[in-house]
Amino acid sequence: MSSPHAQLTNRRWFIALICTFALNGLFFATWVSRTPETEEKLGLTTVSYGFFAMVLGFGALLSVILGSRLLSRWGSRRMLVASFVGMSFFFTLTGLAITAGSLPLAVLSNLGMGLFFGMSNFANNIEATDVDRASRRSLLPPLHGAYSVGLLAGSALGALSIAANMSQWLDFALVASATAVCGIIATRYIPRDGSLHNAEHDHTGITATTTTPTQQRAVWRERRTLGLAAIALAFVLAEYTAATWLPIFLVSGGMTAEEGALGFTCFAVAMAVGRLLGGFVVERVARPLLLSLLSIVCVAGIVLVMLTDVVALVFVGATLWGLGASLGYPLVSSALAEDPALSPARIRVLLVFMNTAILGVGPALGAIGQAFGLMAAIAVPGVLLIVAGSATRLARPLEPTRRGVGRSASP
Image 1 (tube, one colour):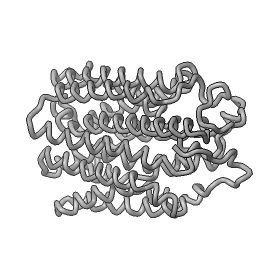
Image 2: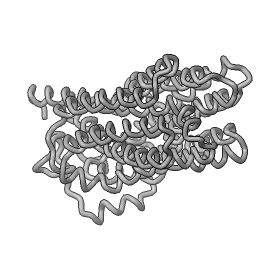
Image 3: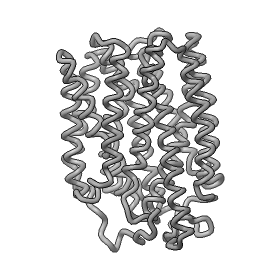
Image 4: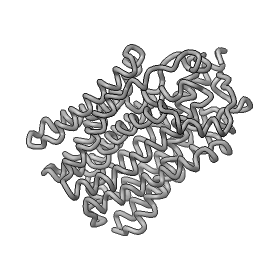
């Protein structure tokens, strides 16, 4: 895909994905910014809120199981349209359920919300690795940076809506409407595709060797794939621990709801900056070294957040936490997508690990928080990051003979 027309298509494709990633971030941050209010209105304890949050992760995990079949039948464009419509509907319903104090309805709507959110995330990640391979530049950091910009916008708007005493259902309904409309418009610029990597439907300009189902299942036995997915799990757990528990931890430590939302905003700003500027760093620093440095920064941030006696350090810590967590997942995703033939299978492994981390953030850390305090709960991702930082040699590039076809046109 080296013609001017192909390059224009790639640029539009890249910009469309920037929008879809950002919308996912806006959606999720809006949800997170109102978590203390959700916990209060539904009358949940730390443990029970953990199980409530697990429902969202369970829906996302189900979407990975269903995602491959839906993607092969519908293609990313139609899958994303369905995802944004369904996600927006259930998000509005969740807001109404929480405002009414109906726990059963909130659980049901949260499950639907997680299912469609996970579908959108699945299609986004497959398309992101495709457009990254079709470019000479490293595009995964800015794409995930767009998600972080959405997180930033959502957390800032959440803080404003709390300060303005806006009803939670109205807040959710407004964001849901914007997400649905903008998502449908953006997906028009994603190439039409009917299958993952068939020659008939390929839109990357890269011809990948056809793989058999046996070869695709074999990735679950690859030491490198599983090790990299485990490293990503530590970074994702750090990210979603902040998203799920940081506002609640800060409020339980004596801060106001607005200050709790501001703390998460610091985290989101750092995530956005790290990812938007990350392409420059990724192209100049070896991937294993960069992953090690990121884990150190993230652990330092978590430790500072735990020192709640000095408020200024809490916000500094939240910033370092976000900066350290920013590039872990994109770097691992890039490492697993080096071979075009097995990229979809390996990305599915990564997504299963990622959604398992999201699933465990609620109940597992909630139980730890109930038994030992939330400080102990947020220390868990720090410990896992220390372990992950010692195994980053797995992120070394594949040998040229194992990497498949190289990159071609830039978007």
